[in-house]
Image 1 (spheres, rainbow, N blue to C red):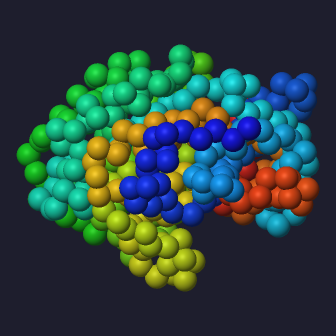
Image 2: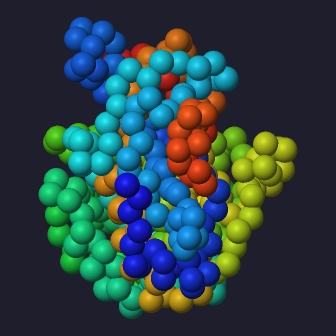
Length: 339
């Protein structure tokens, strides 16, 4: 069945602009394959356009035999499959903001100042076992966890407000990605300490002014997160809809860096000129995360290198579910299990 929600219809009618799609990966014990090495998991989302209303909704009725999965262009067998209510791993949701900058609010995280309570109704839809935390980074190369993972929505929202209320940071560094990297490394460490294991999701509340000419550092930041399987989302109040992924392939400077991270991990970046729509947008993001698909496969090589990952529907599924878009990450890093 396809789930259509009133709030997402409202988003589409109000110029919420999602960027294109992609997916995710992680190493977990392969319980179904007793004694074998851990599988790599690809997490993703399926969306379908309604033929009559043209509204977009989540497609939740796909099965294992509807998917094909390719590792570096070679099809691999899908060995395990789970979806929606069958998913066992709860979420570690991180609200990410940039420290207070002397820049226009729509280019930074300033648009959330005094408006964090608008996110509370959506956050109350977190599942039992889901945790929430807050982290920030600055252009001067600093990054930190402000509110460790916990169950208090109020503490998390207050944590965001505290970061945004701090004195403006006037130190601009062309390599602010160092701050991003420091922040991401602390997030990964805090998430890995959670018991039971949580699946990390970063939500950047940020106008995505970020740009870099050091794509090696930008890729290094993402690699630190890629091995966790997590997905990255973003929300802003501008109308940016660029294709930074293409700029990175061409070796050029990258603007709107968070857009790129969203695309490459299977998330989305949503833009709207209306801050009152940020809450419904977050509600839809949480629906995607809770109703995701997880495909388990065994990589041919655990070489620690970046592999291209592609997930598509079979030809039969494409006929049965027309106008369906899959969002799975475009890359993963297969690692040998730690001993």
